[in-house]
Image (cartoon, rainbow, N blue to C red; front, side, top):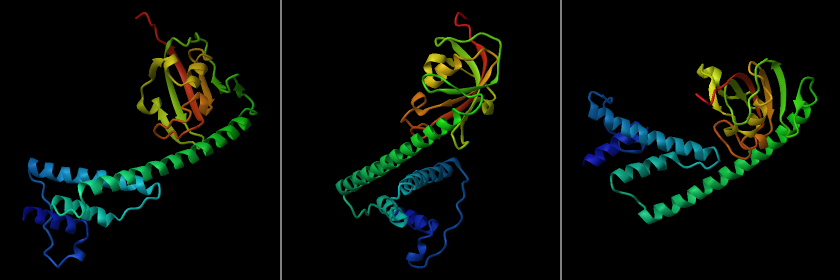
Length: 243
């Protein structure tokens, strides 16, 4: 009886009660105590997880009937599943395979497009006045020239920086955090390791980093595979490793 009541509430709350016999509208949910908040929070958490999973599948053009997803959830909590555990494992394994295959195809397509876009951008950018190109293909221009020392690859540096994609999308910024970044120069992407060594303390450079000197075919956050990256970097200090 208790599970049936839960199912009725779920159906009504999700707008599916029109498919059921006419019934009294449930009262508004009141969260008056810890146990009620915990119960409601658990339901919201499950719903958010399912919604995010469906959204990620729809991004690769796999669209499942959300009403049936909800019905499956209700049948599970009322012990009325129409499928065996083995059948469920089989179809969901196949679904995961479909999603992974389409995600990989999408990533490959994005990677190829990024590579072509990056190469075209760098070829044109290299012709601009003030842009210099190193033997590795790293491009940079001096925005402000400092007079301090230059770091070595083994040094730890303190920098402020802004990172963007070619379309101007910002993916990282120490300025936004209002806190400079401190890191060993030989433990970052090779474009940074090479580029920051060109700078004197007090300088501000702009780097145009080809994908092979950045994250290559890896994706991270807003950075998709084979992305060319642009960084504005201020070299604030070289940390004293003896401290």
